[in-house]
Image (cartoon, rainbow, N blue to C red; front, side, top):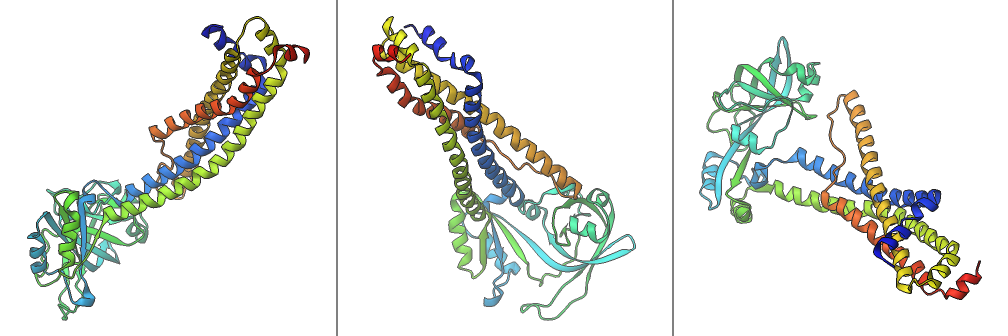
Length: 396
């Protein structure tokens, strides 16, 4: 029997038993679609979370904070010691003040983070409206969306507004005496960040901050990720608190690896039921075509021809189920994503992509569908090829 004849006989199941074959393919498609839907949801949530907490530059930076319990503060002298550590590229600092902001004739309390522009870049801030701060314009600020709620304004209405603020230095163990407020006016809101805290970010250029006020935090940018561990150890030896965003990213990736496995297991349960249904379809096809197999054997078809015919049938059916699964999984994900984003926009939230489809995983779905189709066809194919031609003809 030629390869053309085998392929023609193997594809006949898609036309001879349309209803049963369609239901079997849909069953396989639902199984693969469930796996794709659940796992792509896990990847999408992982990507959305990482996007909100990191930026490219932030992954090679260390966050340094004072250790007030041990009396270790981020004084200018401590910052200079950090700059001398081998592997340190730059050190950017920030102050943290209680503040009073004024927009128009209305004032409110807030927290002010005053820092260098490079620090804000390493902070990985994302704006929902407007733009990031311009290095050429020191009279711009970023405000959180919570500040807009305080003043009853939408983020888009805040951009371009004039704002003034007063920084309220507080007493510390190192600087026990309160000092005069630091006044700043005629600033423009350049952009709005997403945050539930009433906070604004302003460059330290142009602000007369006393030299004896310690820094609240520092960002230490390392020359490469290879030296981050040694730099972190050196800073820790100075008694300061050090953390790394890359560690947070690693923990998030580990967490979602477990989540994706659990979600995939739920989909595999559905797929197992579908595979049983496909095996049942191939078994019924064998019983219905016993006489046909006897005729084929009597006119010269070999056992190998019968075996290949059934295996090709099941493999093609599995492949069709995989394609159907890709279509159903992606379509259902996009529908859910659209509904969620419409609801988020209606409630004033930010739209995001809840689903991600790595190409390797789409390829894995197709490969798995072919393998499952092949495996579920082996049993019925062996039974069909082992039928005695005379017995098969008598079964009519």
